[in-house]
Image 1 (cartoon, one colour):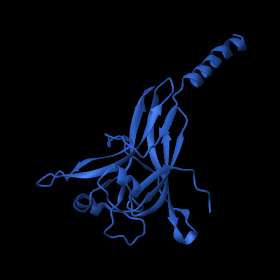
Image 2: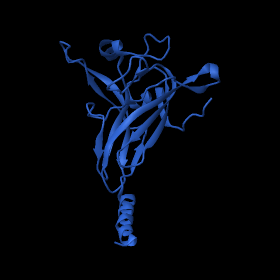
Image 3: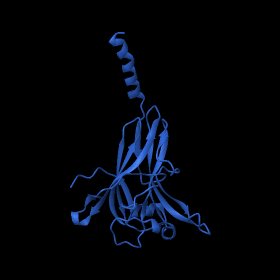
Image 4: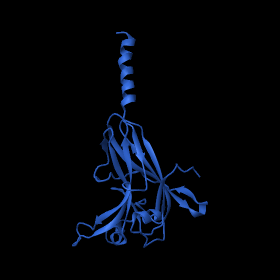
Length: 222
């Protein structure tokens, strides 16, 4: 068989894969429904279940391509902490091990498929009321080095975590790196600058002045 006859179907398959492959996009806004106030219940074992207010912070993934994206997973890959002794520059947290973030509404699965045109949310973290943190979360804190024993924490949404690295953020300023991976399309990166005062406010409008999250670029190596 002529080489040209073999090349034509190969070229057609390459063009098909390029033109019809999935195209994932990561979007973040510090407004509902990305970030919003809701309620959380006390631990299931508690004798009387009580609903407490909580703020959730999420970003959205859209498949703008023409085919399904397979085995997508979202990873918290790096953490930078702004250090006042370094002229306000972010310092990379050493030996941070990448961990899966939770899909909104489904914390049991690390990977999922995303159909063309589908929009889904992934959780970054949450801030629950002081009462809920004391009753249900305080014994789970793994802090960055701090002196904020009684401060509210921004709890990172990590279904699985290591005791050797932080799973929450005390008041301060940070940058986190989030990676989006799929079996059959290009990987994506999202860098978020987080400035957290540690103060609770009841309304979304006021709370989003105490914790300000915005997109940024990867910090330069120092």
